[in-house]
Image 1: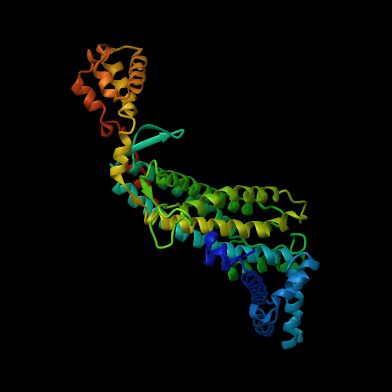
Image 2: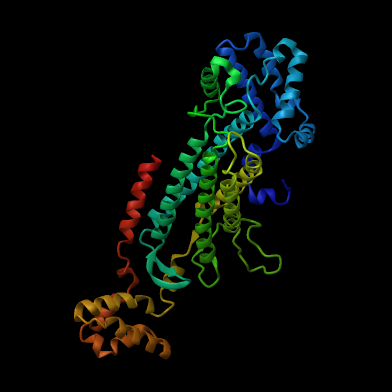
Length: 450
């Protein structure tokens, strides 16, 4: 269901156009026209029949509302469509009408029509995904050395860099891009098996027609028809679920970084974006909110596709029908999340000064692990962690920085003089292999995106 209020928020117009009624109809008619051409290419259909059939495969000639009413009785839209198509061809050339939909079944037309639209839909998502990936690569490079607080379980943990955070997001999206590409390629597979998957209706020409039809539509010819083997569809749905989940992870991080208490990163500002109806001071997340909503809804849709895999024998009951609205909704939600996150990542505003301020929020407690490691190495004591932990507790109780407590403890200063402690307390000195990880991800990015 489309809504003038909500559709622009949750899905892109280009993706919506691929799954509206006219696009569904146009794709099925394209398959019907291609089938006639394929059969004509091997002599099954007279060349004179092609022009009338192709002329009648214009979606603008059809009453979609009337087809919808007939679909409710027939059980799928291909049945009434073929009846009307045949009648329209007969009006032009009665002899050509005998060659409409020759030897195909409704599922051949509907599945292949979906596949044609899915190829376009994946291409749309890939274009936006690549933009997001390029934006993350830029953030990773520019902020490879920008220190910030790493956070675990909602608590400040150890220093990290924003570049490493962005590189982690980038690495994830690169993997998902590969998965989406593979799933889209696998899904671009012709469905043509006739009533029960044998193509008996094509006589001795079954495989020849299938090859010609796949070529007409630029689709892969599978080893067998896949009427009740829905793994390609489920795999495509899983890839979309991974993409929305990955975008949701990034969105969650950014939304947290936008909070008043953190205030380290912000969605790009725009007139009328992210305001509050009651609180003029607020700068609310918008793009991240939509991505998170898609991430919340997508798993249920993916689960429906997996449930629909269990279909009976050569043609199933109900599972196939369950895919139609599910796939349309999943593509739509993913497109909306993707578009919002492209805009967010391309214009992400960072506040490195606030990141530095937040590093000092715990007055040095974040550096306790670095001191513990150094103390253990310098003293050989196995209880170094307990000594530093006790100093941390005293610092919190006294309300002052950890350095003062460390410098006042002889058990520590005997091995780590104050100047050494001061050096250890610098967040920049405890970033480990962060820059190496960023470099590794950027190397992968350069290799896969060239």
